[in-house]
Length: 208
Ligand code: GTP
Ligand code: MG
Image (cartoon, rainbow, N blue to C red; front, side):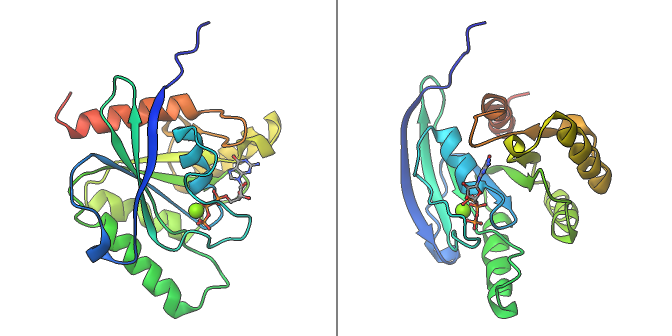
């Protein structure tokens, strides 16, 4: 089968912001990457953009501490902005700093006009915690569409995948079909995720 490979014409860093005042003017549709620190937000963003180091990644949690905006231009598609949000739930961070992160993340998500969808990333090897459980109703209250994205699937064999998926879906009470399984290392699920993103963006533009 011929693979319809997404063609990325340009992928560029737009700006970093430490508060609302630093966000770029509202324009292109935006897709936000949200999840626990180290879950693989920046890695997946890079994989979708077909760039090795557009967003900085690190084995040390807490690499992304600002809201980073990236403009992605594709062939025959409208451009989108990817928004890489700082990871939450990093235990070693002091409570005060944690509160600041939350303020920054919510400051972006709450009331951002062009936001079309949140990708909530979950590490395949971990159970979702209170942060994820509380976040879903928070988004629903604001009518922000969300897609659940399982990351690092390459780290598990087939039976482990099944087991982990069952645990994650049960924990969140959300059916398995709602999850996109991905690996930023192998590229698994990346085309499927682009299709989801396109559908969410189109819906936001008033398409059926
Ligand atoms: P913060 O910026 O700290 O919030 O982290 P992040 O969510 O942006 O994670 P990042 O993309 O920096 O990845 C964290 C670590 O996980 C890095 O060492 C990545 O190489 C690794 N990683 C990310 N995605 C995958 C994946 O799909 N498979 C595997 N095996 N490792 C991954
Ligand atoms: Mg990051």
